[in-house]
Length: 196
Image: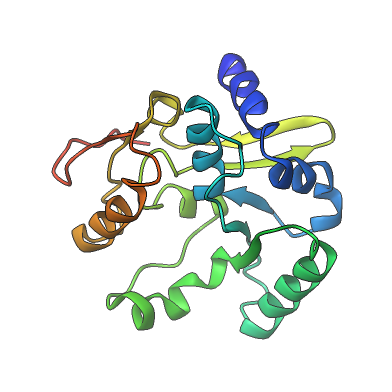
C-alpha cells in the first residue's frame, strides 16, 4: 500500500483543486469526512494520459458520516459552508452524509438500499471498482480508503461494482467517460468483480 499511496499522492498533486482541498482538510471539519470517487479516479486517469490533473472534472464529492443527525438541512448547511469557503475553485462541491443516503435513494434511483454502517461501507458500493476510493489528510499523511484496492485505478480499468447499481447506471457512466478518457479499458457489466 505504501507504493500505491506514493503513486496516488503524485497523481493528486497534478490537480490543484484536490491539492488545495486536501491541504485544507482540517477546515472541511466533517465527521469521518473524505473526498471520494470520480474526482480522484479521473485525476489519476488524466495524469496517466498526460493531461492536466483537473481536466474534465466538474465536481468533487465530499462525504461524511453522522448517524446522530440525519437531517437534509444539516447536510445542506455543511455543503453551503464548504462551497462558500472554496468558492474560488472551478468545481462544484457535492457534500453528502452517507448515514442518510438510504432515506432518499429509492426516490432517486427506484429501489431501496439498507443504511450504510460507515463511509467505508458506502465506498464499497460505489458504481465502479476504480471509483470505489476515498482520500483525506490526517496531519500530513494521506489516508486512503479503497475496499477493492487500487489495481483497477492505476491499471486504467473501469469495471462495474454490482453491489448496488444497475446495468443502466453503469452503462450511462461508460457512455459519458468513453469520449473523455478513451485510453481506459471498459469492462462489460457481466465481468467478475473482486470482493472487498
